[in-house]
Image (cartoon, rainbow, N blue to C red; front, side, top):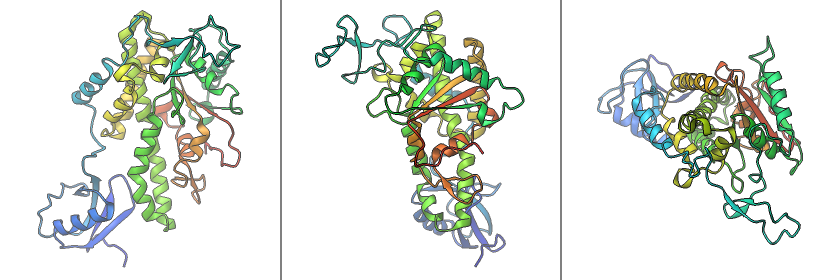
Length: 393
């Protein structure tokens, strides 16, 4: 029997069009909640559509459409003083520079004895007690490095300034494809030493970099795993699910960018004339002492905010940053992006809506949104061979 809002209690997830469950009207709130929470596997808050929350002691729920949210995840809060205070506490000591040069203290050591041909007069940066060639001898601003990073930045500026097509993904994304060891990551890091940029990587287990992507993806997968399992056998419900996931991707990306933007604003205000793109990059990569996880901690503060609150805050902070840095836009690097073609495969829609695609496709297809107008996304990878390349349409 098809659900009918005149005789049934019809429950949908807040923000989704898909029906999760329905019950005959007149059942007690306690009975409905107990049964429904077993289905979704978590406690929920339930409310009538455009109406009050269900208290839980109602003897008979009336027929109609209802919305639910997982308990403790309002996901629709406004930005207020409490969020500012929470973020400030995290960032207050995230950018401590012992040498007062706007950079964290690096672990510099002589080259390891196992490398007899290395120059003994050049120190190597160690990361996690292991020598890191990526972090060693990174250039200062406008200093020539080992790669063509400055050429990449110039090309991105030309592409981003294209008139008449500013809303197209093609003006906001660049793919850097090369075999392993071809200098992709080094290019991304050197570019971030010349201009203030945001660096993310799909592979940070052994290399420097915040684990923000891994944590954000794990959170997204966990949040939608059960729903995906329930609808994947129903073509129509699966199609609706994928379209909703694509809509949610805008907020997913915006929240991550806001995390870095808030960090950059604090870094600039704290270090003034000593601030530099390289300094901010190093704080993204290795942090300092107990605050090395400032990226993930700040991101967690934003989980309860509404889509509109995150979007408006990002736009406001970016306008501040553009004035402070004299940059029109901010390069954002997604290193080892080919890994994104193997994550959450099937959760996002193909262009014609008939098939499923992985997370990276959902990411790229969202870049035309106006909130990303002052960002340029650089995707580095070995290749898309054997995989469906991320598409803009």
